[in-house]
Figure: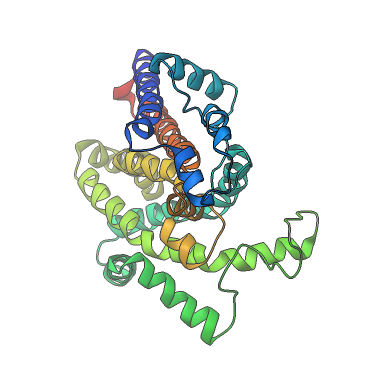
Length: 326
């Protein structure tokens, strides 16, 4: 329990530092969002509105500590400001719909690739020289070595353009309905069909890494004395493989998985770009292109907090799985 308490306090400090940096870095840059907005509108905005807009975006003139206190207060109330490129839409109204689309696609694909890779890695190490170890592992490793965007475009070309089995862009058929309608079975079916190709891209490109990592960890654990003792006691292969070997071999993979799960919030930028999927990566790309500082600031903060939470959950799993941590 003391271990988790120390880790929790550490992550609280890390979160506070991230929030502080998220406040100061945009203010150290040349200009501010209001000047960008006035430049984009090319004189069509009344210059007298500049101070009001600066106050709206949190870039008011005054003591920096006073601005910081205002920023923390707005953050505590969930006020992330207004988007510049979609003015006057609140940033929260843009982020949360995109976040849900990302969690549905990238989150499910990441968890699926991890679970499949871990299970295959266990069997590849337990039965070295078998089909998984000799054929599937090299194939998935080669696929994972290709550039991400190349694999995505190849899948689009084969299954979308040539075979025409699946749609190639967006999250649903906008001809069916312009807005999401989860009560409509046709809409749900359209979402599943549109999400299958980007999900396969993520699973195929990341499967080899999880498989290879778990296989190597298992091989190291299988040589330990406690595994030999478990086998000498006459325990079943299944129990030795999962309860004794895999339980310890999976620990190094949990850290990598927690990091990848945290970065899920940021979206898979290349995949969302190729498939024009309305997730966080696609939203961040548009924010950078439009120099939408409040939106970028909110996305970066959300990614940081998600990574910290995912790492803390990995620490909790460490305590559950590894008696030494307790």
